Length: 174
Image 1: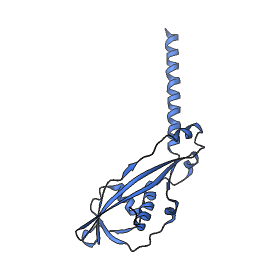
Image 2: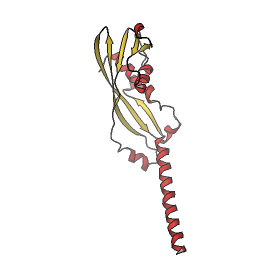
Image 3: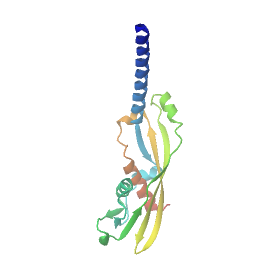
Image 4: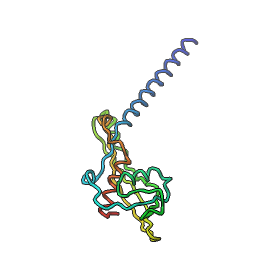
């Protein structure tokens, strides 16, 4: 009876060890990512226009506000009477891509870079003198998984989304 319980205990510990090892590999691979902006021309774009002073009507959408601030398109104010323009933000929508390429990363232990091209829809309304203009932008931000991205600093989604938003806004593309 004691022999059977020790064998059972050993099997349970072995399964637990394998499970913990598997979970640690998954956690390691999940930290090996970076973000890339597409098209490549958008990576180096500079803001060239005069900045309007804006007041954000719904600043409770923290992520969307951060993206708009990182785009460096506007000067922000907390007083609505000093603003040239008011902005009504909408939640960002993500249209994820297929995750099948991640299998190749696991097989090669992260030595093969894998690209997951995600599309995001960023939308806001411009309210100027009672006139509402809706603006929608398709942001193409690719997430790359690669072991060597563990040592890079391109993990700031908000910064990359701000870059693409700035480029799209300046080009007038929707």
